[in-house]
Amino acid sequence: MRIFLLTLAWLCKIAAIVIWLIEAVVKIGFDISNLRDPSHWSGEDWGTPTFEHRIYLEIATLIALVVLAVLPNRWLVFSPVTFAISLLIVLIPFYRIFGSLTEWSDLLWMIPLMSLFALLPLSLILSFVRQRKGEKVGYV
Image (cartoon, rainbow, N blue to C red; front, top):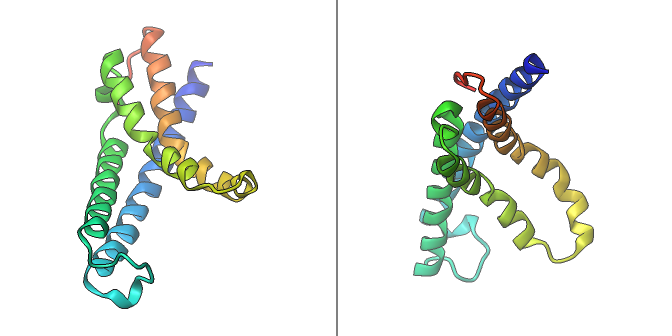
């Protein structure tokens, strides 16, 4: 069971790093172009401070998620407090997904996206479980 948890944590961590780095490159580039060029944005609040603050908040959240994906899990699970804080931060994408749902039938289309976002919290939880069992947690 120990090898299985370690292997699963490694796979989740590597996949989360790749997914969040790709997400950061694509999304930050797209958000910065939205700030500068109104032709990409069809919303009615483009150019307002609300729009700019929303974009800055999305970029800051994405950078925080990338940093948490790249940091070793041993730094994120060494105490229950740091584990709880980092777990709350990596659950932000789920809040955005459930907050944007208008009907429960839309949830079916969001399941693949949620499964990709679930890799980082799963990696943290697996590392925390291993650390609580007394095993030494390395990178993952």
